[in-house]
Length: 631
Image (cartoon, rainbow, N blue to C red; front, side, top):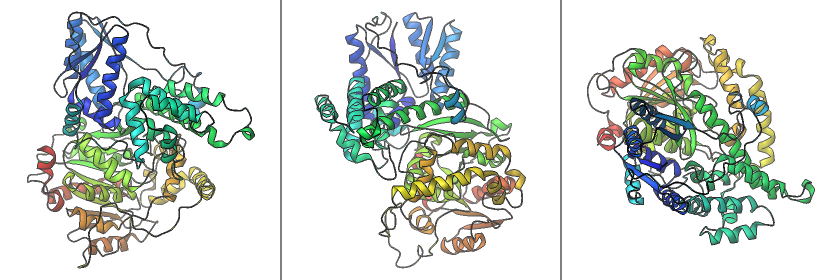
């Protein structure tokens, strides 16, 4: 028996970025080795080239003389590819690969509707006990050197533009420091931090804080309090424990069990204790439950064909600890040949939608020779919905730009619908070298026409305009949002058809069903409530002209019932020099109502950008993209 960690630079980069820091991964590996050595074993480090994890696993099995290899099941796209490769290589030598998981409830998935799953699932499973002793590695395997923090940081940088700052969700420094300390200290430190967190709302907080201090952690109670906010109740849990969960130092079973124990220690009647006393335990229990549900749902859909009659397959990516889904289609997947010089196409949905709403455009563009990606933003569709400060900054310069770096790996032409249009513009403004062109479909965001003025100043791409207004009260947000949420849930079908005026049949039962399914996910209401707390964003044309400066196209459904679509198209044409504006006989979501026209427009735009049919990366902000990413 041997415990083996395969150091594949591509997988290590993904893990380091998911944990928020190469330091967290380095510390966790060091703590794991120390834990194994206490039990009479050791951690074997197998180094290999990027994408060669499967070969390394097969080599380790051969060296150890092992007939079976066990690995944790993960739905993440690079992991599933590596596991499939390892399984095929092991089978050649008569060996086998067994993937295991430990779902939170017995019986696993009980339906992809959360309400049905919560109704039918089995009882909560207990955490798996740690072994008392572990056999040493066989003579054929040598432990090797642990990777250094610098080595892992270099891998993370090579795998997607550098490791992000720890938990870049606006978490305060105290929370980030506590999260890093817990992850670097291994399972013991993570457990101590969890205990301190669960007790932070009650009388035991002082004792828990003392324990966390002995473990080398900052004051967990203070860090938890600093990470809470009116827009993110319960947000302290992901701020403090996302790295530990991502690295496997804490399991969902452990979090749920410890949270249940903490709740059991509280007085039996709410009047005897304040709501604050139970808040950390309730946040932890909810996070474990939601994370488990999304992991099970992702596993059931990993590598599945696109839904709704679309093309491509469903894949998964963990962004800074958040499990997200994306659709990818290649020319080969639809029986087509790649278009020489074609860029990757990135398609971003609007508020309340999801990546597969681009189903027709994905199929059409792939048939034209493009590789197409349609991610589902955190908080929507079948992506995870933890309590985060959702808004343009998180979705644009955060998720979308990181997706281009970490998944696509080369410059893209990005198209966005509704708020997705604003998100794409914000992402391109933050990192213009990643975007060879930006296409807007009925985009959200104001157009003030000042971006081309002589007195237009600079500024950070996502710096919000300050209006001095205080945030609304939590009671007001709860009351209004619940009423609106209920109304929208009851009227999804009719609302969609109103947004598809020339082709209401495209707003089919599958689309309405997927939106209704997502609305019942844990955390969905909090995402909806985020609109009440979003800062007033900068003007759309300011982002495109001052910060991005690359090619822009506008494909506008002129029959949009939500606004003066023709007037907005004219305003964008006047405010963004060189913008290519096309009016379509469609409503608010032309990508699903008239997908053939949108695909044709995007393909033509790619040609005008010098992409698809020869030429280099387009003008403006996209000129440096080829060398900045590929080089």
